[in-house]
Structure formats: structure tokens, C-alpha cells
Image 1 (tube, rainbow, N blue to C red):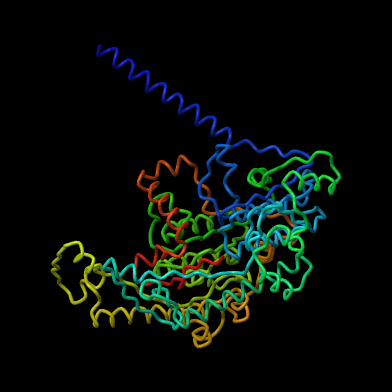
Image 2 (image 1 turned 180 degrees about the vertical axis):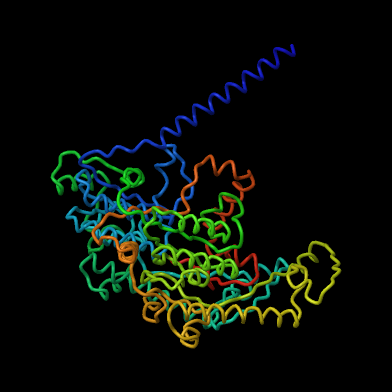
Length: 574
């Protein structure tokens, strides 16, 4: 009986191992197989949800791979390739439920405009479209929408969440000190509504975004910005109203879009090629330019679990990647792509130090995405050229310190605690007791020194004096257009401009090919799973769902406390 049992067990183990080997072999083959692009194809941009700066995990399973959105640099490479690819006859744009910021919207919009220079048409098919989807669709030669659909274009709304009343009910208090009139990141934890300074800046943000929306949509629909503003005030629109007001061209269904497009490009059969497959077929050629992606909150040390690698800029891990780029002799130049609200003060300084060493070795250009504020701006001031979109959220040069206290929560739960100390300030970071006056004074000295260092480093990099930058600092958020006017960035533009500039700095041909190499590189699914615990996976899934439901939640860095260079707000602009 015992021999029979062990025989069955060994047989099961051998079978499982065999299946695992077969699956891994199939996956490996799938990973190296290039998608086949049919002749007479329409490139379908069915973008939904987020478009990341970089995809962290490579899952070489065709079905799963085909569901993942391409990253920003993938879109850039794909649309440039599609413009000259004789197999691609047109683009069909189908944006849905976009969760990206307005900087990335500008990037994709400009890439589509560049594609149209090839003479190939761009059609858009809208389903349940809002302002972001319509912003992209306005680039199209022809816009379709379903006859019974609604065009939810009615202006922009900004929502800022405040958690003080909730924390009061829980018995949690947060003490925040800051340098800079506008450095009010702690307000979401300590107040119940906007301060006058917050309201001033957020109205400025809305004015910029709304003005750009009306200007861009009007240009695409051959209207004036004032005409577009008047139309938006009448929204949202039923399908017939959208057509009669010239916001869309045709009411119809998806098959009718392709029937129309076949006549436009003069072919009998038009194949569909999804962008999620096409970008994997784009050939690698040209000069190797690194795109060093920093996205997410800036934290100290290593990320908490492998699934967090693409959500934070962890100083130790990011420094290692910077050194990898610096030592790679095949890399001709570097674009630092920043999409970060900032975070830990010391971590930001460590990253900036490594970036300056990189800048001394290779041509470097900074390209700001949706957000490059506070610590995100700090790591950008290497002294190299900085580019931003008109709608990039940047600036916020300031410092704050936050400390939560849960003593009252302990009381509600019936928990008592005693503390023994040696040293006057031994409990300065204890969450069991609030800061004393002496501790507050001690910490205020620290943030004053950190703020002055921040301003001084920006002044040196931007070739201005301390007082000039101090007047622009104070924690104030600027949009890209204003940052350019104030000398905080050098020019307005996206990846095209960044590539052109870094090629110029590297003394490469202005007409040469560019192969964008993304760092950190994608990790295999095997690497992620073997370096992650079940808890890592569960926490990553839960946090993602919570933040999708409550986009105004405080950032990780703010919840960790300490000296921070971080954007004052978590914004949801719809």
C-alpha cells in the first residue's frame, strides 16, 4: 500500500512538472513570435482606462497580451511606423472610459495629427464618450457615434476630497507643518474644504484645461473657441443634437464606419489591426535612446513588493536603473520621462544626485508627462533642458511635514499605552502622541532648511537667483504653459520634441531613426511571481480597486509622513 501511495504521488509530481515545462515552453515561443500584420489594414486605437508611461510586466500569453494598453512610448513608435507602413491604410480611433491625464491626452492627440500628415485618414467611433474621449476624437477627419448614444460633453469638473471629519470619527489627528503659502497637501487630512490659496490655484488649473479643450476641439471641428464654449454649455448631447450642432459627422454603427472607410481608402476588404498587437510588431531600428521612466510617488529604498515597481519611484531601485543606463555604451542619449507628484524629500535628493551623474556621462533631456510636481519637479532640475505639455501640472516647490496621531483611536478601542523615553525628542515620530511645541519647533527648522535647499538647487539649475525662484515657489502649482512663461521649463512639447532635442545634444542626424529603449525594462511574469508573496498580489489588487473608486485618496508618501516634497492635491478632473 505504501509503495502504491508513493508511486501515485511521484506520478502526480512528474505530471505537474511536465505540464509546467510544456506551458513555459509555449509561453516562451509566444513571447518571441511577432504578430502578422495583414495588407489593407485599419489600425484600431481601442484605448480604454489608463495608458501608462511604461508597462512593468511582460505577460507573453496572446489573449492577455492583447488586452493590455500600449505604453506612451509604444504609441509614439507605432504611429510613426504606421504613417509609412504601406499595409496600414487608416486609423480608427475608439476611446472609452479614459483614465489618463491631460498631458498624455495632448501627447496622443499630437501623435495623431502627425500621422495625418501621411495623407492617411483618421476616423473616430464614439461610444459613451465624455470630454477626454471627445478631445482625442476631435483630431479625426470624420466622427461617428451610435444613433441612440449620448455625447457626455458638458464642461470640466474638478473634485477634491477632504478626510478630516472621517479621521475625527476614527479618533485620528494629523499635524502638518509646511513652508510655502500654497504648500497645502496636508489640508485633505486637516481641513474640511478648500483654502483660498487652493481655490485660487485650482481655478487656474481648470481655466487652463477648459481653455485648451475648447481651443483643441474647436480647431478639429472647424469652429471658433467661443462657439465651442457656447456649445459645451448646452451639453450633454443626444446623438441627433450632437450631429445637428456639428460635434459629430455621422450617426451609425461600427460596421458602417468600416464600410465608409473602405470607400475612402479605395479597397474592397479592410482588415482590422489592433494597436495592442501592432506595437509589438514595430521593428527595432535606429539610434538607441533610453526613456528612463519615473512614474508614481517617490519613496525611499526599495518598493514594497514586486507589483509596486511600476507604481512608485523607489530611490534605491531607481538609482540602480540610472546607473544601468549610464553604463550602457549602446545608449546614445537619455530622455527622463517624469510622471510623479513627488514624495519623500531625502529620496528625491538621492535620485537627483544619480541623475546629475548620468547627465555628466550622456546627453539628457527631461520630458514631463501629466504631473511633474514638487519632488517630481525636483528630480527634473539636473540643469538639462526641461519640456512640458501646456497641461502638465508642475512646480509646487515647497516642503511639508506630516505626522498622524492615533491616541484617541486607541481610547475608542480601549487600548492603553505607556511610553518610556531617553532623550528629549525620542517620541517625535511616535503615532501615539501629538507633537509638543518644542518638537514642532524642531521639525520646523528641518523643513526650513529643506525648503531653502530646494529653492537653491532649482535656482542653480534654472540659472536664476534665489529670490526669483522663491517668488515662484511657495508650494504653488503651475500648469506647463505658465511654467514656461516663468522659466521653470524650457519649452512646450512632448516626446517628438524631446527626441529631437536629445538627438541634437548627442550630435546625431536630425533625420535619423530612433529606437526608444525603456528603463526600467519589463520584467517577465515569472520574475514578478517569484519575487512576490500572495500578500503582495492581494494588496496590489485591493489598493488599485480602492484608488479607482476613490481617486482623491492621499498618496502613499503623504500617509507615510516625514519630510515631503509632494503635490498639494489629489485631483479628479472630469
